[in-house]
Image (cartoon, rainbow, N blue to C red; front, side, top):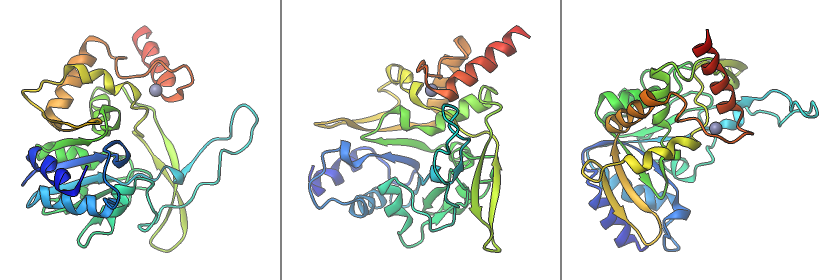
Length: 266
Ligand SMILES: [Zn+2]
């Protein structure tokens, strides 16, 4: 995909003036050489115009993990979050370096925002509200933009689980450098779990509601967050376990399912 094609496809998504959270995977888009993450962000910023861009800049390396139950060894030394800690998403990492971009200070689930609503979207991002910026985005009738990614990347869907108290009990500890330059342990409640099963909603997306730009490989889509959450609620109404995966080795989903079946029994 050339720079001109990328610009045209982004235009077709009609992002101008909107508040959007972007989940992009450049390796899935077949971009020409030279279209690096920073250039990609420049075109994205241009497409959004007077709107606001939001991107997850997550840092799971700050998590204090329990020892591996199989052999008691540690699963790796955590690093402490600081505003300069790089995220492993190259696109969010590029956006973070844009003039005017803001980043929230959540140790594991920080977001980068750029545009007139940036401060507002990040304003209630507390440690126990890891997806707070997406709640704000929903209040502002924002959309989820998937660029070479699928619904497994749409972390906003965890809001449906949280709203239905299906994600209760997920607590983690992470490290952060505090204002006094000391490393502190931060307890995070409502920690979002696994997203593997979110693609079950793919088949339900209506082309009358979403914007779809098919590509040679993959696609670009804009999906109103409110609509996506409505779909999730409809599915969860039928089956509260629908958005948990069936991978036997998935600790998150196994634990959530066990907790929920206990709740049904009690
Ligand atoms: Zn899972």
